[in-house]
Image (cartoon, rainbow, N blue to C red; front, side):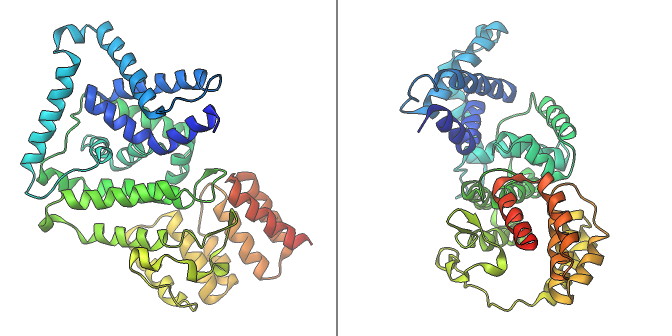
Length: 382
């Protein structure tokens, strides 16, 4: 694998873990992020010209530590503090003290959870915390995060910058159990949004990113092991169940690298054994799904919920009803015009459907979804 490709894959899969290790080592988020960014820049210059190192993650950490050490020296912090090896030992000792404060049997096994908990600090708003964790811990691009939150990219970039600044002096430690519980909702937001990005990437060539989806599931599982049993919430269990159900469909959603729509999926390829579920029946009770979306609208009236409800309504009551419901939806991105095109096509309004597909294609940044949209357009135009 070429150096550039290996670096891109490494950053997509390991950025959060490497950043968490560096934050644990230097105990400053700003230094860790700058150091890792410098290491990535160095790798981008050196790896294409030579073979990538045998241990690329270790190479990045080593270079990042050097950059951080230089920064500490320039700030005259290193001279006043203990040597770096002692700092590392101190971090380990303090981490053990934090673990000892948790109820017996609750052990933090993932440094990324520690970093997510830092990002979900109470000083940040719920949305800012989730966005920051997605960017720093899971490496989701800023443009994709902006699409998840339905805001312009510059708005999201500014929001992330402000959040980083506010966390400059925050402690990289697992909060005590009582405070952990208050952050559960925010961590759940991070996991759900990360899973969404893995299940349906907003950009790039991937049909789906099962590794990112699996990371989101692991995040919830680890959080459940840290929370005292009496403080675990039904919402967290429901979130885990929802993600497991969706993740079990990953093999059926792709056929020879091509995205497969739900009506065309082979449900026998669902991973029933892995997640202890059985493939659902071919007949779906869409009336119940519409009813659940009606209930969800009362709790959380968002454009995404309204879009999903309109799709379910089209299945239950017909495409005309779905189109009427779409008139109440306003959201950026390609999925709204793509849904409208599908309903128009089912009504036999091919020219209108093609125009809507053209609009969706102009906005789509994921090549796999764009290919499906082009296929649908070709079918309508003959």
